[in-house]
Length: 369
Image (cartoon, rainbow, N blue to C red; front, side):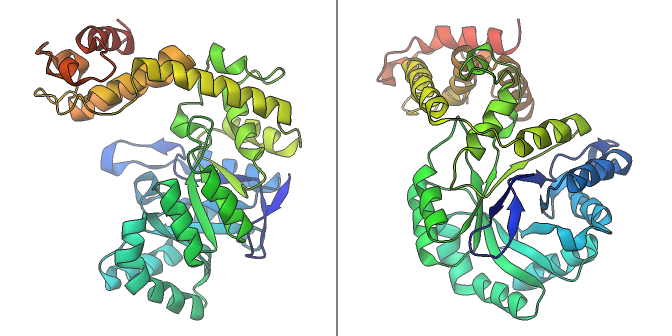
């Protein structure tokens, strides 16, 4: 296993981290629980191979992830850097209760990296800076946590704003081949001694599938998930790449990538950058996501549908796009075939896209019809 510095925390962490939010489950609905017989051997296999960074949270796996991680940590605690999160931003009593519950579920005396869960700049200014930072400091003073971190969902500009506060020692954020908007902020965080933990190196599963387009980018790398992970690990400003592993096969494949020391060359990265820019330009010809077409009188989220369709036809990510579209339509009901062809959207589209016709095409393709 290859290790990197987690900023100035003093921890040397494996460049592959175990994201414990997609552990194998058993049961249905609110009664679903983590399958211990599968999950704990997966965690132990990772630990035995040298992985020493685990990330969990209160709500993961139907609020069972922390318990399973705690069970798996027995006999390994001193070797593992444990990260978990607190999603409360309003009630201070609830915030403390979450911390106490996490310590109890994890069966530990302290948490190595304790994160505000899902911060943005507005939330930092309104909730964290004036109040919750004091609770974090108190927990630190009491020895209940060792380092203050946060998971982050916002723009690059606001990532830079957060880094410049000097408040956190570690930031967990999104970064992958399809989403590189935070690269400047990531570089600044590394420069300032802040650990950078990447969630979503395979873009929430979108790069976890086959794609003839993407797997042809770099000779010798034939699996898209491997390419995606190697891309993130090739950034020297990244401390850890988290993978939400749900099978033993995922564990073994990711351990192999993270342990062989074979990064992407500068030539590989230049090729990826050029090809991804070309693909993005092609996707923008179809739709830039400007949202001028909204609102649709029928509630059709045109840019979202086109984004999924474009990922499939430009990047070759058909399986992921179909799965995402069908799952999203089941929840939201915002199907492309709800269009009644009023043409209001086409009148507002600056690219003059034949939206009505493309919605039909998108729906048929994404439904596999």
